[in-house]
Length: 243
Image (cartoon, rainbow, N blue to C red; front, side, top):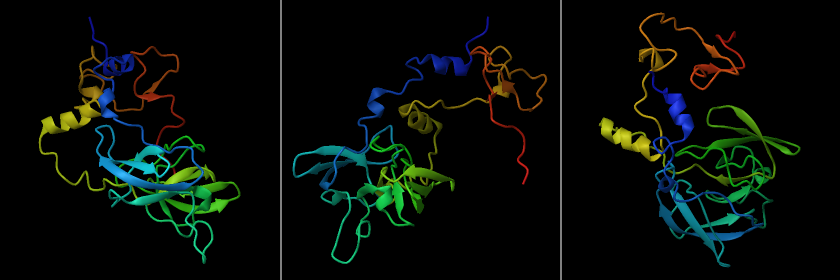
């Protein structure tokens, strides 16, 4: 009698493959305010995130937590909305750590924790040391170059944090031990070590066994059962791209 393959066991959602609640000690994001000044009162690490978490408070007592910008310190003040001065228009007086709408930023500005839709709290570019770049504005659309060099379009009312996310260099220190790597992955409920499917027994995976190792693209059918839905699952295209 065979075992459930890894994709089945992960899909079941048992405690083995579920992210621990303590991994995400908070939900970083933005609050719904039109403007104001906030002060950083705390910096802490979260096992479920690769960026330090900063806690901010305003004079009115409003608090929220957001990903820390690079070189942020306790006591630093940030602003929601634009920083205006007598010589410049909206968007010219921003400093790293400020939170603003994409439509108010000039081209070339580095941003992170970008909202997908206005007021959703931030969905994109949320890993340590990463930043996207404002490329151009076209009507109600702002073009952003993502860290992958892909250009993505956002609404001008989507908010983002100016600067580069803290936590850069976290991969520079070598892990050295397999046990340390195991617990790093376990904090985020990532499957590690990962065994290649073609190296398994036939009873454990559809790609297993030592016979018939033809490394060819295998497309799973849309109505395939969970035990067979492995490999390429309904891809848009296969094969090498023609230049």
